Length: 145
Ligand code: DQA
Image (cartoon, rainbow, N blue to C red; front, side, top):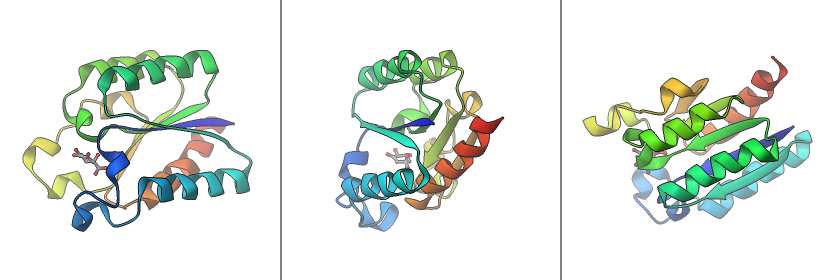
């Protein structure tokens, strides 16, 4: 099973940005945790991070040709307004899980809407970096269907 994890803008700044909200663990630590779990469970894992919308769309489209089995995506702020990322996700029919580190519903109102959620199978939010690991477990189940 091949899973692609996509992180959007500013998530490369984990451990630096707003530690009270996102914690003090770095992006590299997150990836190391994901890789350790993937290795232990025999999952092929690809991780991608970019700050720009176009690069994220290109990566989602590439997943189609790479025959990825599932996509886990934290679109960062793009979740709240990128119809282009939503359309890219909608065009790839594999299971998709949206992740947010913080509980966006406890934050500013502009974070309460995600245009991406309706084209994903599920969403995990507010559970910190663990959310990505939980998404991997959920993805294994979704891929069995
Ligand atoms: C975030 C929530 C977004 O509102 C914010 O713009 C981010 C991170 C999260 O993981 O909690 O960059 O996606």
